[in-house]
Amino acid sequence: MNGRAVPLPPGAVSLRKVVTSPPVAGRVRLDKAPVARTSLRGRVIAVIGLAGSGRSTVAAQTAAAFAGQGLDEVVSVDASPWPGSSRSPVDPGRAWGWRRLAALPDGSGPTCVPVVHGVWRLGGCEAFDTVGPSEVLRVLDMCRERMAIVDCPAGGAATARACVAVADAVVAVCRADPVDLRNMARLLGLLAGDARRDLPAVVAVVAHRPGRWPRAAAVAEAGVAEVAGAVVRMPFRRELSRTGTVVGPALAGVDVAAAVSLLLG
Image (cartoon, rainbow, N blue to C red; front, side):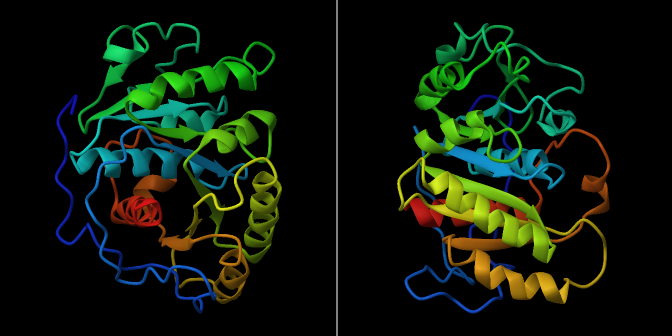
């Protein structure tokens, strides 16, 4: 591991606060399921979501959680040009273009930044008129030497669809809101048309305000479970609601990583 890995919290290799909606026939029931600590080297995890959902925060949390296991070197790829890219685990304001990637295989050079918890982060991409899906796919191919977590552009943009098409699993992020949950179900259906129908998908439902879990959102989770292998709730955390760099995995981020590991295992 490049950098200094942060130990996971006690019991972090098992799932706890996972989907409470009824299990769907043919889907994996993840509640309190043990997760094997196996290597996911060479796997690409695409993190998708609607604008403002907390996608970049979840991507950073998930990358930090995988790195904390100490099993694989993790590359956090920022393919989103929007302000949320500052959530990736690197000094605020640091950004690089996609084109300076010659040093990626050995993790050296100005494009690769080792951070304290063992995540390599690639800086924010350039404008869409200079970086197309084919260039992003070349980057992901280079990342196959490690494990890659890709923060995709919001919605169903061409670059996001291209990332999903080559991904080994998808983490779909949405707010704890029934409308957002229904939109996410439709988005997953759209992206499934460009990828393998059995592509493992974990939906991370993010609470954007304190208080009890919204009742309407809990009902809508059952519909999302029809198109996803797991639904993980991410409770509100005030420190993550402010703009800033994610420097370590929260417990909910560990749960997302554990769900991905279980579905890929």
